[in-house]
Amino acid sequence: MGQRNMKTFLSIIGIAAALVMATVSAAMNFAFLSSLGKTEMEGQMLGAASAAADLLKCLLPFFIAWAWREQRFVAALSGTAVFILFAGFSLLSAIGFASSNRDAVVQNRSAMDESFARADQEYQRKIAALAALPTRRPATVLAEELRAAQQNRLWSRSKDCTEATEAQSRAFCDSYFRLRGEQAAAEEAVRLEVSISALQAELASLKTQGAGQARDAQVMVLSNLFGLPEERLRLVLIVAVALVVELGSSLGLYLAAGPRMGAITVSDPDMSQREEPRPVGDIEAFVLAMLRPAQNGQASISELSSAYRQWCARNQLEAIEDRQFGDRFRELAKAIQLPQSGGKFVGIGLAPGSC
Image (cartoon, rainbow, N blue to C red; front, top):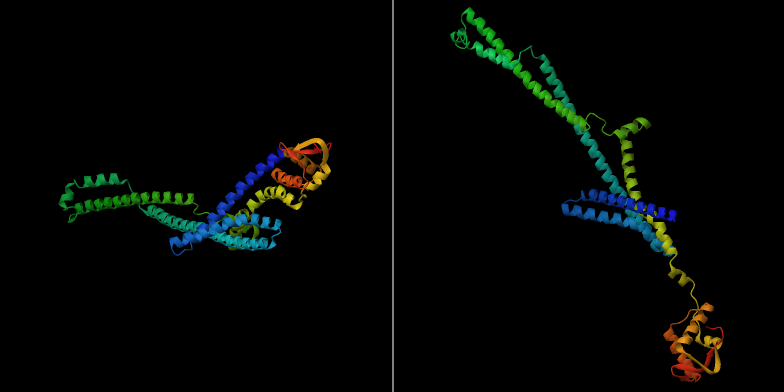
């Protein structure tokens, strides 16, 4: 009993897994074929047709097996041809879906690598620009010194350092413009530091998304392991993924549920009855074998019918229905002029051991 329960449990798991595979295969085919339509409606039509063909493909192994078991070989061979056609079509659609999906991932990582390279190049340029700036004090300190210089009497005498004709004014204005230059460098440094911080955050985000890493790590590892070109390995992996999905969706359901359904078919009682029909019990033979003349004897139709069924069972014969037995026995009694009284036939009795 434990082993039977385990088989049932595993069969249920297998059927559930096969249904998942069939659903995934139908969804892949729908997604790929629907993308080939010129319009949205045409795409939906192509996708629906491909999904329906994929689901029918899962059921065809059952139909083929049943036709073969019933010796309908033409139907079995036709179903096999249709199964091969549907499976091949579904495999091509799955390969197309897997290829476009994997290529999209590789192209996305390639675009991220390009963005990472540009951001890193800009980051390095701004780091170098920041390092090239002269030594400077904070911009706020320099702003205060400039405001203090503008309060000096030489500032107004030189007309805001536009007419510095005296030596003292020229020296003052030279110091003022050096402060202005130092302030500009400080402001540029602040701008560069803000830009560098933003680039650092962008580079960190791109790294988190996979930039700077292998575009297809699985292909790279296998290429290094077997020494094969990456493009060929990528093609092999795309076909392998499609094969796994299609084999699971094509044969998974039949392998999980087929043996149990086949056992039920073999044990069909109607088949055994058609193969070994039993002969029908003859009423005249029953009368000769089981009835005897008896002066005071009498028997009703129900008693005779019961005896007839027992006689058929002992002789492995097929008994006719009670109503049919009654009609035929009355015809026989009328033919031999057997008297009847009170619903019973008079002058007959059942042979000993008949009941």
